Length: 407
Image (cartoon, rainbow, N blue to C red; front, side, top):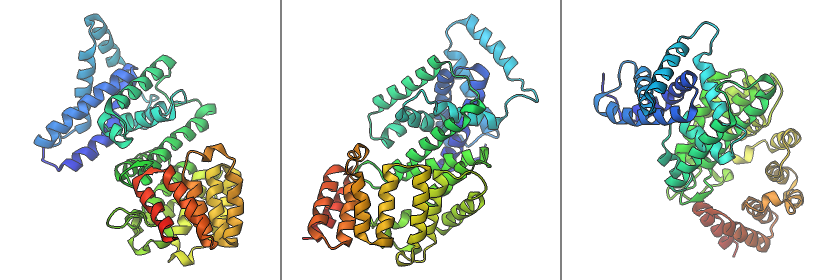
């Protein structure tokens, strides 16, 4: 063994976690028990490897420890012998049997099973595929650890009772299940990029984990345009992270950000993904959002942003994936191309949409467009309403300041 730094151990464990879990679930067919055993093995490795160094074959080490924990957990000696015998048969993989790639894909699809609620899909994906502990996931979503533990336990019970097999979904279900997987990763990234509540605007642990999982999915499915589109969207958006807040964590809007602070490496990687995938197959919402992010990132300055192109892309996006958030963003593009009053007229079509009643963003955008239109009183009231509606402390401060500046 050779000593390594703790971050290297953590990165390695998160990379190996889904591989080891896939091996055990394929071997024994019991997702819930195998997942618990893998978590115990990860904790043991985190303690031992940090002190003694990483073993020569870390995956084998984890698999052996997790297998031992799993087998030791079964109470009946006869059941134990039976399962061990079964495992020895299943562990001999023939040429036509699943590969590690198939195991990893099956694990992702299992965690994002449609029988689970979106919060359960998020939690289970972060734990089983991301290798995060229950405590880390609870902290990420600002809920008590006991609550998150119950959520994960119920999710595993739901999968067990549904009789879902550890395999890729049939071809007829694949596209729908893939949409669920992409949505889960998208939600994880969004919660990190603009936290819904709490004292910080950003949660880099979540954005980093979402990008890591998206990279893994892209390696497993390199020809899927929407997988590449989602990864590109994350990279192009996260590239602006250093410019999004000031030294006190105060939000800086896109139009006021210093472009020289943007991560050019991430931008180049994201642009390459967009250029390789756009036009090569059916276009989807993540590819279109990535294309919009690319236009923003390619602009030398906010004043030189190609807003007509962004508006055209939003018009296509609204046809491909209509929804109030798309309309909200299109209203901003309309305002930048045709003037704030035109944007406000489009924004007014969302007032009766109940889906926008639980977010502050409609009032925040309205305040911005009213300010551009010269209506200081209306903008001030919209900013104040938006500030009251958000649970994010940085956004509350930002919106309250915008209102105060208007008198």
